[in-house]
Length: 145
Length: 145
Length: 79
Length: 79
Image 1 (cartoon, rainbow over the protein chains, first blue to last red):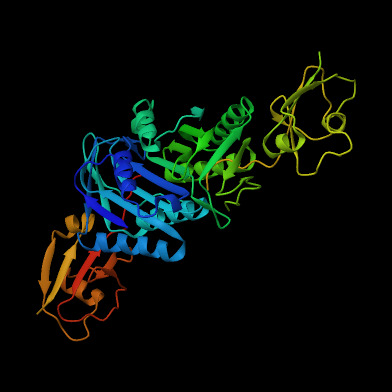
Image 2: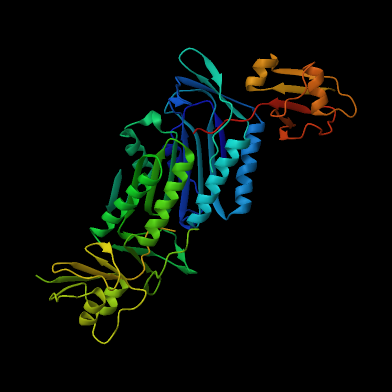
């Protein structure tokens, strides 16, 4: 299980490639479900030039670890990886990466989505958007179901 | 939209990295959902040393293109990628890669799973497993829901 | 012309035919075609049928030149 | 000892405080703490509360040394 909150840009596919090299039981894995959330250049009809991702250091990591542990308790999983960016972000930058490895696809799909929905609704991150002439806080996330 | 049926091994993360470079509207993408199915070294309690993936050339590609087009008609998607391996496969080899890019996560999650379930239940591929002392055809896929 | 007939996977091995052709007859269906190619054994209920690479029912009306494939339940896609 | 108080995001900007401390009183709750730190304005219903980095209700009983955070609905995770 790997949980990372990072101010550095990350490349999700390279992160996954590197992580898979150290999977303990590679030949027991039949399924991997992945979600990557990236920054869009538009929100609620306005062009967004950049974004600042604030978080609650300590609580964020603890909360993400708990989500991942909860998913592992609920489904039979081989591994879970979560990476979340903080700080200054520009359009097309990856913001979040969630990956779940399991024996069969149902577990991987369900656990990946569960982790994302929990992260979006409970992990303490906040986005402030830089528009052309002003900055504004994003007030709520769109529902995922 | 990219559909590939290939006898050559493929590295899913590198495939995704390369495919994203040519996404038309990169900054409109907020979500990418991915599924990778890999070969396990065990099935129904027996060790599996290798596998042969047979397919129906022509119908397979046509069917996968139709699934992808159906997903694009049903959800608002930016792009769809499907890669499926055929021929000789060994444990831990990637067999299938499905990736969906969209504005928001709900579309990406749902379309990715829809394509996988349709592929598993309808695309004309068949697996023959090489066990220690015999070969056998896999008779059915496990349900994904 | 004629009907092209294909068998895949375990069905191909059981029947011992991969490809064959059969003369077209007016009113021919995949079920009737099967009984001509595999005598003495009606089309099993779990065998899937494709006509010109599209899924079709056993009573689909064939046209001269069609390609008809018979195959067992599909098992692609990893775990 | 004392209670450490933190505000995040839009709430931090509105209130103008990032971190502060407040003397502990027996029976103290996040709701009561808020009214001491932000006088004249009761705890808004949509503000989330964490005590020692765990979500807690506004009437959670605090212990001396606790860290209490107030923040708006969370908005992480991309699209």
